[in-house]
Image (cartoon, rainbow, N blue to C red; front, side):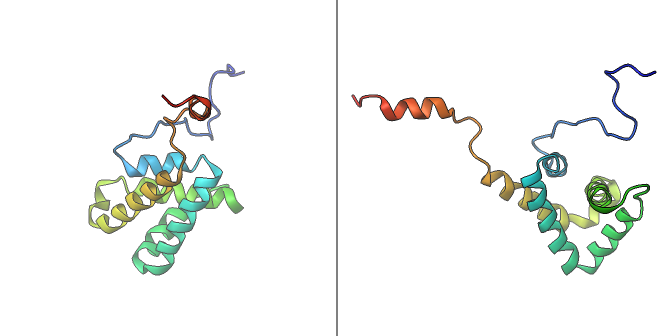
Length: 129
């Protein structure tokens, strides 16, 4: 019926993160299980400690339909992050700064992607000059 190259209607197209946008980076981190857990934990702590953010997260969760369990929570989290991109979120600057710090912390924990492990191993066995 539909060509195999078309994506399913209920699955969003993958997006590349804009390196200058912490919200885009946060959304892309949701695709990696380890980073997703760290991001979810940080946002959960923020939402629990701030009643205003709890209200925003509740509104984001209220727009999740047809899902349950972890899939519903993941969708609510994505909605919450997408809401931070809207112009009406301008008064939520502390939350944007918080998300930027969390993303930076998570990225700092990642191994250096420019480091070639084979070159580093070869350097150990080279004779020093």
